[in-house]
Image (tube, rainbow, N blue to C red):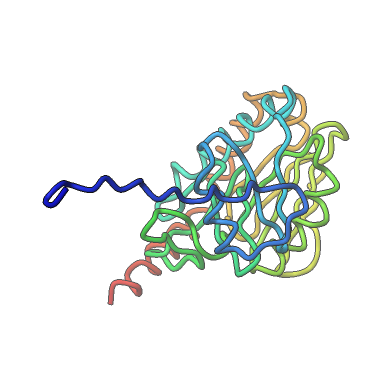
Length: 236
């Protein structure tokens, strides 16, 4: 009938292919597919290969808050830096990991990463931390190489089962080792001191005591001044 409205069927879009362990993808294609997943699903792209995370075990859940708490105390005393937990980070054309923790100097203070319009991190953060239980081989090899290539300065792997802490300094190519008291000291973030034995013993009192000593150190005060000077240069 003339003038009658014609009903049109909506055009259905094909569903995006699921992300599977071992898929080889570019970062833009990975990001496009990953955006369709619920926010509590953790999937990473490392060296162009997709890795779907397994359920988190209890010991991982014990150690990560301890480590996060120490770094939060340091961050709170250091204007110009930012602590992020499980945040999507675009490192390159074949890399989009989601580190357990990352500590970065904000772009406004001269950091080497920046925030995107969609509120992701783009570029290498200065320090990345992974708590490793069932993923030790992945964290110590594939991820380590990926972070090194991308320009991350320091990388910490907390091996829960083995009770080992590995602190890599990619700038020198040498590991950061503990002193005779078992304390690790960051080079890129002066004053970030972590007692490895206290971390594995879940001794929060000792962890707090040591990081507060680092915050009170002259090298931390000098670092805060450098950050402020970097902000002034950026604003010119």
